[in-house]
Image (tube, rainbow, N blue to C red; front, side):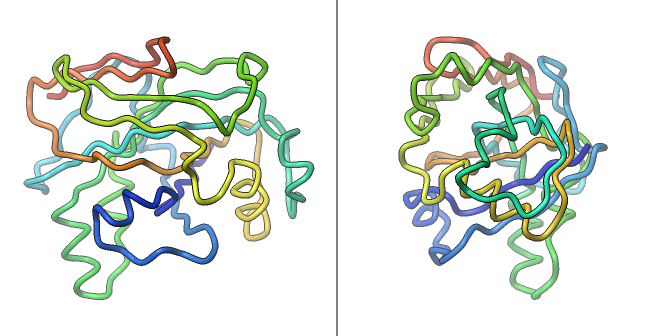
Amino acid sequence: MKFICIARNYAKHIEELEHETPQEPVFFLKQENAITRCNRPFFIPDFSERVDYETEIIVKINRLGKCISEKHAHLYYDEIGLGVDFTARDVQKRCIEQGNPWEIAKAFDGSAVVGKFLPKSQFADVQNINFHLLQNGEMVQKGNTKDMLFTIDRLISHVSKYMTLKMGDILFTGTPVGVGPVHINDRLQGFIEDQKMFDFNVK
């Protein structure tokens, strides 16, 4: 299993971090060691002084695929969930400034929270899904998949040009504006529409 994570897929988040808008999807990988399963605690790593939450709609790949056309991409997933792409922001910033890869800021142990999944058939339009995050009971991030620069199907098609997608792989589709730091003893709760998808503590 691998996590394919999309960067810079919401315009306001791009502005938030002062990045350039991409002309095609940008992605990076997290390996299986990065997973924090539904409702288990997330442990802040000791090598970072600022770890940010990035709440994202995720999809689970359900079949083997390579060079998938955009019009057929919808056949390659039938579940939609919610996750968190934790980012060691200070480490990432330092890596970018030095021109180095920044996997150490994104792919560290426990950095990919995977919540529950719902049947895709439950949604009338996967490109019109509301989701939000509560931090200690306060809404800190919300988004809608209609605001994606690149649709889920476009993302699947694009990624599959470069690597084979396998059953069980999980695609993180990008985060909207509103990312921020987590602290020890925080409680994070994520929702798709009014359904709670994860509920965990930060340690």
